[in-house]
Length: 556
Image (cartoon, rainbow, N blue to C red; front, side):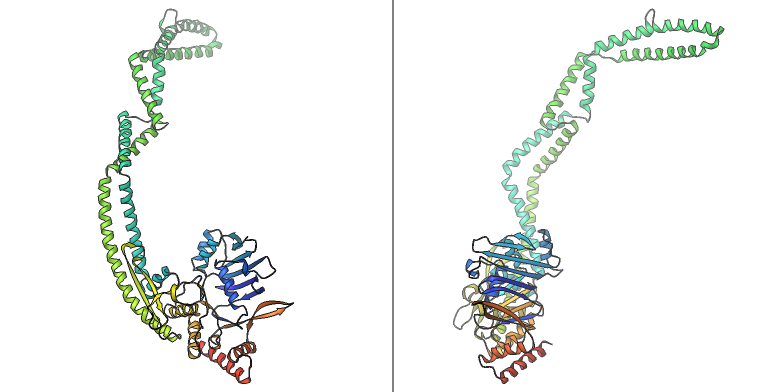
C-alpha cells in the first residue's frame, strides 16, 4: 500500500508531500491544477519512461520518493530479502531524473536499476487510465484473469506441473538423440579403460608392497652374504663370539665361587649370551628366507611398470585407479542401457502427453464456459457504467502443441459503440474506458492482485446516477485494496473515505501545485465547487453536505 509520496521539481510541482491511508481516496481540483502530474510521478516510481521535459523550469533534476507498506504474507518481502534489501515491512523507492541524463533509481536506500524497479512495481501499484502499466493492456494477463474468474487456478497449477514433467522428459529424449555419436565414442573409451583396469586386478597397497620386495630382490646376494657371515661370527664359525663368551662366563663363575661381589656381572654376561644366541638364530632364519631370484625380480619390475602406467593415465594412487575403473564400469553400463532408457522415456512421454491433452481439453472446455459467463457479467457491469451498447468478448487462439498455460491463448476484445466489431483492448479502448473496464472486472473478481490501484479518467463521459454507481463500485473495490481516484464528479468523491484537493498557487511569481487533505467544511466547499462551478450558493453547500452524509451512510 502506498503510504507516502514526495515530489520535488516535477513539472509545476516544486515540493509536495502527501500521506495516503487505506481505503478509497479521491483527488479533485480544477483542470490543470496538477492532478495528472501526481499520476506521472507514480508512473516514474513504477519504472515508466522519464523525460527531461518533466523537470521544473530552472531546475537541474526532479525526484520522486514513495514509501509502501508491505503485508507480511506477501511474496515481495521475500524477493527483496533475496536481493539483499531489508525492508522491515516498508519499502522506500526513489527515482531521480536529471537534465544531464544521469537518472538514478534507489530501492530500499540502495542504488538499483530501472528494470528491477519496473519488475517490483508490478507487485505494488496498477494505474488504470494511462496506457502505461495496464493490466488489461497486456494479453498475457487475460488468461490469468479468466482462470481466476472460473476458479481454475488449482487446475491450471496442476496442469503446469504436469507440463513441466512433460517438457523435462522431452528434453531428456532430445539430449539422448543429439548425443548418439558422442555416446558411442564415450562408450568405446569407457569400455577400454574399465577393461584395462579390471584386467590389471590391482589390490590396495600393492605398489608399496612390490616396492619393498623389489628392494630386497635387487640386494638379495648382499643380504644373504652379510646375514650368513654375521651368523658365523656370532655362533657357527670357529672362534665364534658366543664360544668366547662362554669361556669368559666360566672364568667369572670361578671368581664368584670365591668372591660373590661379581655375581651381578655373571648374571649380565649370562643374559648377554642368551641375547647373542637369539640374534644368531634370527640371522640364520633371515638368511634362509633371502632370495636372489632374477626371474622374480623381472616379474616385480614388470608389475610396478604396469602400475606406474596406470597411475599416469588414470589417478595418482592404486585406490583411486580402482575407483576410476568402477566409475567407468557404471557409466558404460548406463550408456549400454541408453536404448532401454530411451524406450522408457518414450513410454513416459506418451503417457504424459495423453494426460496433458486430457487435462488441457478439460481446462479449455471450462475456460470456454467461463468466457461466456464472464462476457455476460462484464457487459452487465459496463452497461451500468455509461457504456450501454458496449460489447465484451473473449477470443480463443488454439495451439497445436501444449504450452505451460494450456492449449490456447486468450485475449479480451471490446467494442464501445454499436455496429463495431470487438477488437483487442490495446487497439480500441480509451483511458476512461479502460478504467471502467477494470472497475467492472474488479466487481466480478474482487480478489487483490496488487495492494494499490489508481484510477484516472474513470468518470470520463458519465454523469448523474452512473457517477454515483461508479463511486459505489470504487468503494467496493477499496474494501480489499487501496484505491486512489482522480475525479471531477462530486457523486464519485462523495463515496470516498479520504478526500484531497489539488490546486495551483502562485508564490513569488512562480506557479506551484499543492495538495490539501479535506475535512469538514473544507470538503463541503470543494464538493460544492464541483457541484456548482464558480458561483456557490447556500443551497449548493447544503447539497454537498447531503451527498457527503449519504456517502457515509452507504459506507457503513
